[in-house]
Length: 282
Image (tube, rainbow, N blue to C red; front, side, top):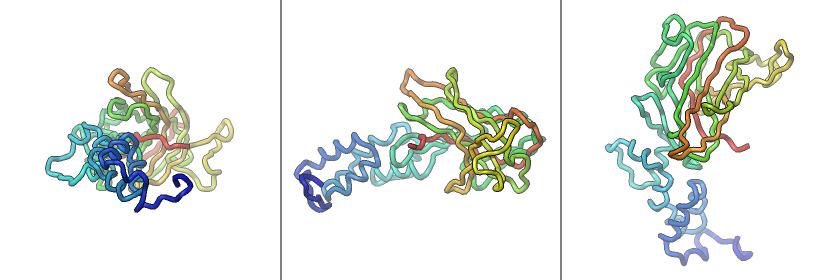
């Protein structure tokens, strides 16, 4: 509504502006706003398709990772391909893509990506197996441990600057799954050298226990529980961190899950990796 009148998509006072000018203005917004602008008028709809806009939303290094055999008719189509079809990099040990609404960079780290896993190199305790539903060649399958310790690191240079991120562990339960029900496991996430966030998570829970809680020696304790993803995997949010970013502000982010009490036997956990994406706005 402008000046008390409703503006339809077929008529707008901005239609008199040159289309290139409108495209340049929209390029200073974000992908979500560009799509909204396309609904203002036919002129805006045409301007919002311009490569001037969408190449601003595509990090230069991401465009260079797309196979030369894939041809896109516009930068907008390339942008949405980078959102919907994660790319594998670093010999298939990392998966990267863009968040559709904001264009922020996201990443998933394979357990093969220099993770520190207690007894991870001993096949009696952990196995590295192919898994058809994984984006990586192999996943980590827990055979049997009492002490669960799983940690990884990533350089924040691959992420978007000035952005708050959340880290998630992505997993499935094996056919034989044991030792995780209502078990509190410590999750730690943070920039190396800074105080990390800490919380208790739970890979499995009893429906008869109050939602989000379990009883322990110190009374009721809140646990972060898993959620099902659209791709059929489960995920648990491990914590958040703020990426300052920039060429001179490249840091290491450390994420881990470790057991500190009740060291009972457990097995049957299948881990695809740790995913880092922009934190949800509360």
